[in-house]
Length: 212
Image 1 (spheres, rainbow, N blue to C red):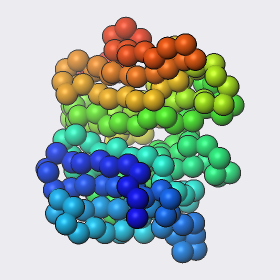
Image 2: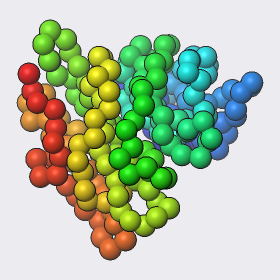
Image 3: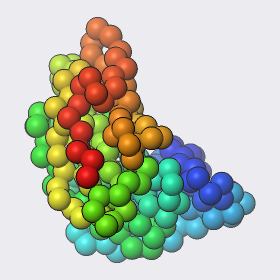
Image 4: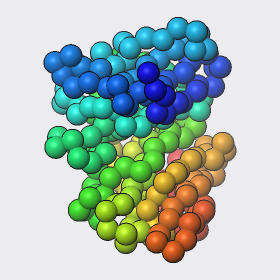
């Protein structure tokens, strides 16, 4: 086995890991997603099995993942498009990988080979009478060298749809929400062009959701 990505939850016991090189497609599906509930002592592939049974069917392998910083049960994973060429689909589970839902169509503003370059989940915040989290992805298109990436945010639960945030500073390779997101709605984004690497903060480059 090979650990391609790792996400450690805030409870100190729950860990999610990806083994991309050893993932296999259906009918003997192993999306390469593993979960430990005891700090890494033992591991289960049940989240993979449940994901494989989800409709619409994901295209494996799972390419990236994120867990909420304040909820070990809330995670999101990145899967390939139907043609298995681009990282374009997001599936979400709020019960530790037992049930999954497809996040909906992402409105790719650059088209072409634009795909997901980074994913994160914000800390929870209250809007109305519900606790919500934002699923955040950053895109990139490594095929054209134009440095055209975008930030997309999905308010979960609710599924109001992915919303582009107007990012204009290169292909995104990392994104993270502020620990104080519930009050400042701030993101830090790392992006790059053919000339340089940028570190951007939300109040400079992004139009974020309005706090209720």
